[in-house]
Image (cartoon, rainbow, N blue to C red; front, side, top):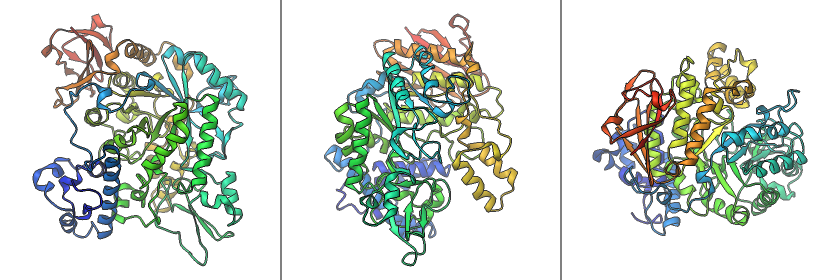
Length: 628
């Protein structure tokens, strides 16, 4: 492949684009979004077509502007890959799924997190220590023994910083202050001490793509043009000079991505809510402030950070308009100009050197819109340790606000692909931004307990680092909201308002909100379910097994019988070997392990090992066998 300086990506052939890490992920994501099988692109005939030819065949839908923006992204991907390898070669076709050692396949040395089990706490709904209805840091302290007994190695704490609470704390007003609803800094210090004294670690959620509009930096930026903070944000002059927003980008929370401040004659960018103003990472002074703040927390003893939408921090030069077609496909205009910006890798590398590396701090980035090949770039040495991708959370052609039953066969396909490209991935099925997975798979609720146990088995036995979301280990399911007044999620309320404004009947608009609101995962944990809970016992057993068997945190992974619908089977092999088989559907299916050499039943999500029917898998049953 030619270097990025000479490659004409605007007229490249599809097969060359597919070798580019950015191109491959964009094509895969587009096909998945439109529910089109990938062989329509990967076959030799289609692969020989050029971008220009594809534009002609599209009947004008693929515009010159689309080709230009796509070419710019491909160049960014090629430069990122070349910068890591020292060559112009980007992502190659993944090697065989049987692979070599998982850590070696990742291309970097393994850190402590490879063997760890993480647990996400959403502080506003996790634990109330004294029954007064306030969920706070003291409530978390009261559950540390529970988490230790569960087998947790590291706690991920969602934002507890001072905030006006427009987006549940993800709009930070003061990075160095604890929000009073959770307690004070003394409570935090006690929490950190309690975690470390039990041999666990703590990572904090950190939002550095944007701040609250009430942050002192933004207030200073609005106060006057001579403020040094004016450069800290993406602010443009408005009013008479620019009566319309500076570009056509839309917010991920509905509406334009710009706030107008008529008194100051300014526009300010917000990719999320109107009170979450995007920082300008082009400002060295702003970056220096961020790095100093990170070091301040690490000096207190925090072990690392989960970085909220960190791949959004670099925006394209000049903030050009978003392409209409891309906006229609992705749902947001302008996203191609910031989901993997031109200086993202540079900023991540600088942040690692200036803030994380001196403390050997762990980092996991939330990276919406990024595929597996781009994730591989982002987790290369000198950048992030792990990333959270999102492509596995919805079936092809579906979005979070679509009402449907999730098909686990897609998850199987995705996880096999992930193991081939990114075997040391962050592995998760639930978090604070998504409805409960058992309810997505079985909206009727009939098999939610069985599904919860099956997902636990997959989470603890597949390659990757597992992350549990609070209540997941208790088999929590979606809430039974009755009307829109039960919903508080700013994203859901924005979408509801938008739908009503377009003439959607209220019952229909509410059903759409009900399908995808983040409030399902954010309701208070039902601790009354912790006694004699089948799902909890399942998690305890499987976490213990993961810690006892090194092949589950390293070694080789082999997938078997891939073509069989509703059947998922794989081997994790080190000095010894374990085989896992799963029924991904609600009907009984045949077990296929008898085709292998002397498998010995070790665990089932349904029954004790000596009671396992080795010929039939029950609905959503998962098993572990010892291969001897």
